[in-house]
Amino acid sequence: MAQTPAVEIQNVSFRYGSHQALDDVSLSIARGEIFVFLGPNGSGKTTLFRLLSTLIPPQQGTIRILGHSVTEESLQVRRQIGVVFQAASVDGKLSVWENLRHQGWLYGLSGAHLRERIEEMLQQLGLAERRDQAVEKLSGGLRRRVELAKGLLHRPRVLLMDEPSTGLDPAARSDLWNYLERIRRQQQVTVVMTTHLLEEAEKADRLAILDRGRLVALDTPGALRSQIGGDIVSLQCEDPQQVARIIEEKLQLTPAVIDHTVRLEHPQGHRLVSELAPLVQEYVRSITVGKPTLEDVFIQRTGHRFWAAEPTQQDPAQQEAPA
Image (cartoon, rainbow, N blue to C red; front, side, top):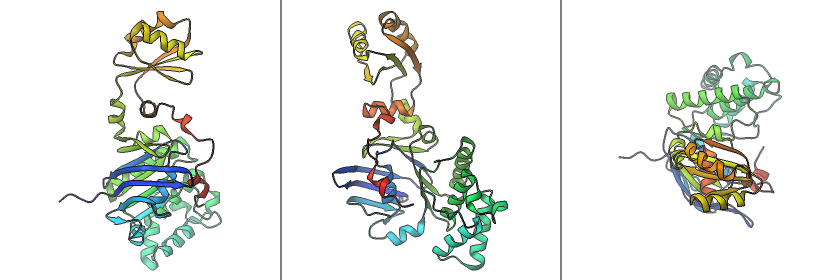
């Protein structure tokens, strides 16, 4: 018998007034996956995170976590999820130990069992020597570890993380991912996170790319990159429309024009450059060839750059997100 997915999202839509935050999103996440929702600000990530963590109910569609409806069985869901918010949820005036003790009380843990769990988390996350230190005195990376310890204290089966690398330097970010890999392997925890960092999404088992509330791509990072036809050839120029017309007329190719860049997908990029250079050299500043990235996948699916997708106004979900 097939195992129930860790997360099932079916035809979920959500609006804030006239703003369509999510538009008919459907996908499932297998147990034990490290799954990433990737998208720029305003893509719907924060709204989806709030729905998964039972902070708001779906307006349309259904969400089930470990077989339980987030709407009708929210209490059962909350017992089985750990949540790490983008905004700090620790009390800076309290020590690491005190923060974890209060978190344990919220989940009904007490006595020797709570002390054992706190000790276990302190050891696993390298916080044992900081137990009595006020959280406000810790570095950003160490504070993020305390947030993780809080989210994992009650042994959740699904860990939800909203932009977990916010404020972390590269070394702390690497430590975070090493720990996530370890808990997935040792405790069979399913990790679901949101991020706007393309390099972070590369580490996921699978990822969903969101753009303006729509699901535009879903697969492993490698499979998504492989769907692009070979190399990416980019030409930087002042008049990209003119360059695009020359390429169409002389080479019978159909380039994409994005901002001041003419972009082509080609199985043999370096050979194409040798044909392009004599035709357009007086019009372009530079020509580059590279292997496809997740941003190239985003461009292919949406027709615009990753950061160009950001709205002029803040996502309503981010405005209302709890501290």
